[in-house]
Length: 452
Ligand code: PLP
Image (tube, rainbow, N blue to C red; front, side, top):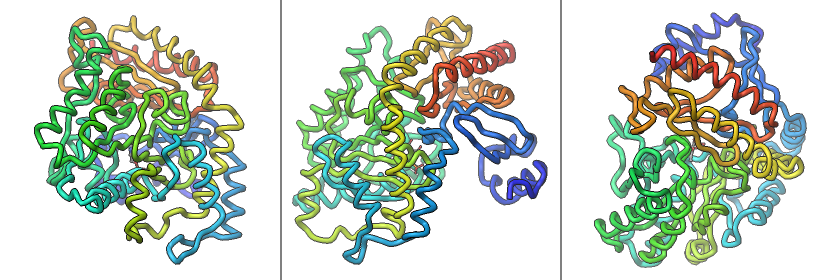
């Protein structure tokens, strides 16, 4: 169908019916890029441009585009059993098999899975599970969930409340009651003269301060991304999560690890809970679970929570498409590919360290304050003053300029404020990293010229 229209015609339709609600004011001027095809790590647009996708779609296409075996599995499943649910004392092979696989892959406390369609609905569901848990434990006052400013957990009313993006809260009267936020462990911006280790402990202490302010008897849980993604790829110091874990234990909080971005190899580990030593009560999975080929999310529920929820009987919750057979079949094949092609090991041993080393080259660039990465997720932070870490004003303008230069040069990177974010498919080789470095340098140089 992509061949039916010219680029201008697709853009006009987009402008009229899809993009008028968005903030993409410049789309009226330049028009949306019309992506018609993708292969490996390259996107192709309706004008025939070949674009390097350094963002894996939206942090999700871990295995890269154009995998025929995924299409074959989906096709076969659509013919055999395109849909059925798990509501009427029924199940089906893909959902049963995927559940077994996820339980085997995730930390040992997880033996139960609940399915959704997106990271947003999964986090929304977790909040309902948390409330149910404390009500069943006869501690109904334990309601408030603490999360971090600049965290992102999705777009539903509850997930956006968990999130700490002011621009999502404004005009929607968010956060909803029962949500509180603390600062994220952003050492480069807020660390001052502290070592990362000292700063990590201080950032975790903010959780304790907030619990004491609210009263532990009123606090139900803490949620965080092991590495904050949309907030700017904020990699916490090694001391942060172990201290958070201790505080959650001390005040009897459930701990939720949102692994929507970090999961399935992104950091060079299958799940980031491993290197950060997080022993969570819930783990949110989406994105890399299917590499974005089909919508699916999974909530891993720890035994101690599952026992309480199961003690009651029906947890009356679920979606028409929970555990959709085609999505589950695709997830199984996706995980097979990740394992067979040793993508996690490669990100850990080869491409991750190589990317980290090459990114260091940008530290000499006049705009670059810090580079950071872990596995194949990284950031290039642009600042006005490299010495004081002072940001540009208004914040976000330079990031947008740089992102536009990337797009002009057929490279996709996302900008959060003035930080350029990188999250490529895990099938990237050192050659792809070299190609990325060349294109990113062109964009950085062009941005420096514009900024003066
Ligand atoms: N959690 C995290 C950490 C995310 O990055 C996202 C999406 O970017 C979500 C949750 C929401 O997932 P979805 O967009 O599938 O609703």
